Every structure is written in C-alpha cells, then in structure tokens.
Length: 324
Ligand code: PMV
Image 1 (cartoon, rainbow, N blue to C red):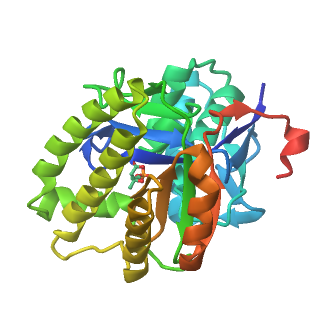
Image 2: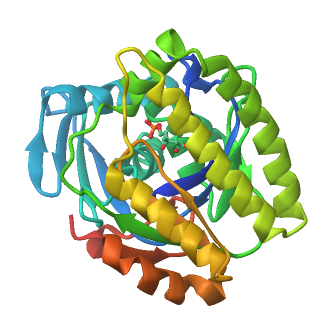
C-alpha cells in the first residue's frame, strides 16, 4: 500500500507528563495517565510519492513549511528507517476542533500520523509498537493511540515506554476555553526550562510517581472522588513547578483561576467535580456522567464549554469519508 488514512483524538491527562528523561528517544521523567477524548479529532492521510522532491505537509488544506514540516519529516524518517523505503510522502491533515480549542493537537496529530505513515510504508505495528512510535513525535501522542483511559509507562528504554488501556469508571470532561487566542511558550521549551531552572523539578517527579500509583489504585477501585482529587492536585503541582522557572512561565490566567474557584464552589454545593489544566490557560472540569450537564451549565459563564467523553484509539479510516 502506498497510501493510508487514519484518525486519532486528543487526550487529557489526569496525571501529567511534564519532563523528559531522554529528549531524543522521548522517554518521560515519569509515567502518566489520561483519557482519550471523543471530540476534536485529527484525520491524516500519508501518500508515498517517489516524484516529490521531499516531504510535503498540508494542514486544513493549507501548505505548511518551516519547523512544523521539519517535525513531520523527522518523524517520517523514523518510519522510513524501519521500512527500508526511502520515498518522500505527501501528508494531508485536518483538525476537527477549533485549532485553539485548548486541547493538545500534537497528541491527536502524531497518533494519526503514526498509524497512517506506518501503514503507507508497509509496516504492521501492534498497538504497543504504534504507541512507542507515536511517542517519538510528541510525548502525549503515546496515549492517543489507546481508547479511553490510558497509562503511559515511563519505561527504561525505547522498548518499555508505551501506553496501554486501564480499566476505570466512566467520567466526563467539561472543557472550558477561557482564552483561545493566547500565544503560549511551547511545552517542549517549558519542560526544558522547568528541568533546568525550577527548584521544584525533582519534587514534581517524585510526587507524580506517587500520584500515578495512587491514581491506578483509584481507577481499579472505581473511586471517582480519589481520582478527581489526585488529578486536581497533580495539575496544580505541575503549574507550581512551571511558575517557579527562571524566567518564570505562567500558563494559568486570572480567568483560569476563576474556573478553579467555580469548581470548588460547585463541590461546596454538593456536586463532585474537579479541575485540571494543561500547558495553557484553559481549564477542564472532571465530573461523573450524571453531573456533566449541570457542571457545563455552571461553568458556561466563564468561557466556551464543551462536554467530552471517552473516545476511540487511533484507527484507519476510508479516504473517501475523510474529506481532506
Ligand atoms: O507532548 P506534549 O508536548 O503534547 O506535552 C504535553 C504535556 C501536557 O499536556 C501539559 C501534559 C500531558 O500529560 O498531556
């Protein structure tokens, strides 16, 4: 096959990945856990073409060059190395979500690219190997290969660092976009600065290992309360470590903190809901399915809300229905 099309969804971490032990192999400092979402998919087709002068990349119908293209080429090089086929490729990608939805499009992007590229270059990878391959594109993409709740084992080497499914109670997430426009410092740069300058870097790594172990127990026990508390604490600890960089980095805005306050107020009214936030200003509330609508209504004053549930892992799709 010289062409393949795949779809993957972003994920939201309940125990965050923040820091690399090996930037070349993309081995993380600690393990992490996330839910793959059922909205904001990326669909990507990869077409091998020996007549192209080099790889070409189109996103939402527009040609992309520069760093983003180089990142795609570096990733395709890994696939080419494994397959022994040297041909360049045309990569066409479409993001369903508004680009600034506050959800990591690099996770869905590299998960979809890993599956489409591996097929187009004739590799047949099982989910574990696909997850290891996606990891090389973007850390969080490791988990977007997996449907629903996924644990990414930090591992010791390329072989042992992959994500797999975890049994957990069904939850909903309410994404609150408080600031769609803000230009952020990339997670890559911020992770590097945290490791180099934040005095809380080591404490972050140690506490995250404990949080992940406790989270896996909570998932197994179907203990929503414990899952929510661990997730909120872990997210705020990540932001604390980031705030302590030199020069400082602050992703959370006053509006973000207002959402965390609104979440606490809901808890005080008896609705069990917890908050988390990635490397950006937007906040995601974590709720039981039966409370999701009420939470979404209560948070609608603070930004644009979208309710999301557990979504599928990366999957091949028919080119004809992909509308690239
Ligand atoms: O791999 P990246 O650059 O998408 O890193 C993402 C890091 C966080 O989203 C902040 C946390 C996580 O575990 O997804």
